Image (cartoon, rainbow, N blue to C red; front, side, top):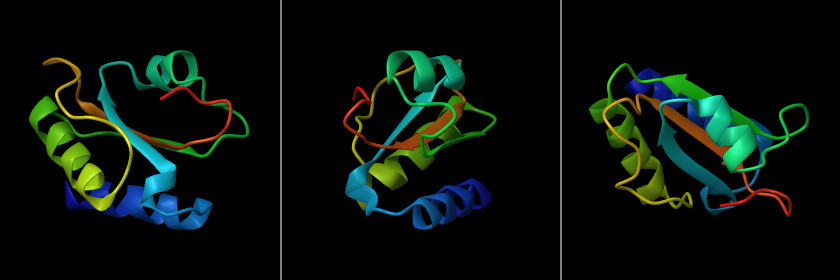
Amino acid sequence: MNKIISEIEEHIKKCGGGYSAWYCGIASKPKDRLFEDHNVNEKSGAWIYRDATTDTAARTIEDYFLKKGCKGGDGGGDRQSKYVYAYKITSTTKQ
């Protein structure tokens, strides 16, 4: 889990904006969630996702970023939601 947290933190730092400028969530199909549900631009948007192996690990990582100030909410997803994702919020994304 620490490796995934570090990778997401580095990505946020590299792409800019504080944690409050980012949305963090969990999903079973992260690309669908990012590019269809949240309307993140796949080519030019700032986004990242990682396989946390279990939904419990994904929820723990999600909770870490929500406590840091990322937008989002806990309690979503299901037992298949083992991916954690984050994207930089823009005027065209849907939270």
